[in-house]
Length: 449
Image 1 (cartoon, rainbow, N blue to C red):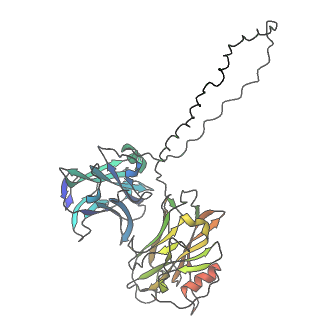
Image 2: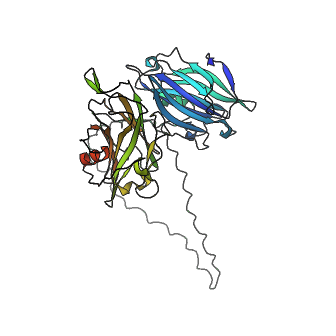
Image 3: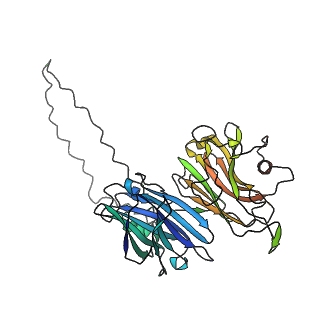
């Protein structure tokens, strides 16, 4: 159902999938979805803000699921379990924010609600009048007499996600202001002798001394001194920062970004630009046939105690999150568009146990090369800014790509963008090729899924 601005429709399903979508194109900025849970038009606290740096509400009712690409359309998804929304919450505002431009540069911006049980579309609103806005309230879910409805809003802000969130009561971590300049130094003052001759002070008056208590008189013990209660810690404002690694700026410290504890999820998504049958040349670049493409996200690890290993679907080497090696691969995604399908998780609570981690991807089947693929890598710490980067276009017959190298540098984990396509020698596996390139020094045997 396509809606006009200001109209509303009932939502009769217990759970809804909210997709914020747009088309990619030259000069189009990235877009992010977020949600604010309101009571009387304001959030109760910063915890009622669900977005890329805070992807799940404490109630579990609202979750930021992430992005996927299909053709030239990108969607960022939020799931809402209406039955789990706390009774005090009366409105869930659904927001779009642009990163690196205005919404006048974003073609095809829309919001779509669907039933995750069967995929049926419940509502859709297309935004067509954007210009200088950098944030949009596209719609809202709200309660009326115990039932949920969806309203198409289409209200824009030119102050970005920070300005919009602040309007609803969110405390945003703003950049620190520059310190005020120090006042100019004054000339030293010259000592001036007193005008009157020195007069000694009068003797201090004698203070009254109470007589000592009579012998054997009971003395009550002094009351214990209670230390003052410590004031409650001030809540930390939310951080809207994101980090994109590039060739010019290829590394970042997790500590400086606040990613020092909890689980960090590593996700790989990809898009097949064009399909070619057999090897050929188009614009001087090698291409390969893509059919049922299956990419495998993997990791080589070396721990502080010197032990080494690999995390991969081959041989069911999925690892473990709460015991060494503190890495876990939770699935095998054959589509590339599933945010929850294939993720590698790193337990940052045990960051001191790591010496280095190399994240890489191999083609298991469906293609002979990465040519014609566009891939994006996202590292999402539980606490801290998300880190993402895109892979360069592949121009060599490569079926294995080193994505990122994480090293322990004096207790600080540093993420280095690699984006390095490797070409295995004849008879050498992709895993062994990565091992040789980075000097891991492991023994390899054939493995199968």
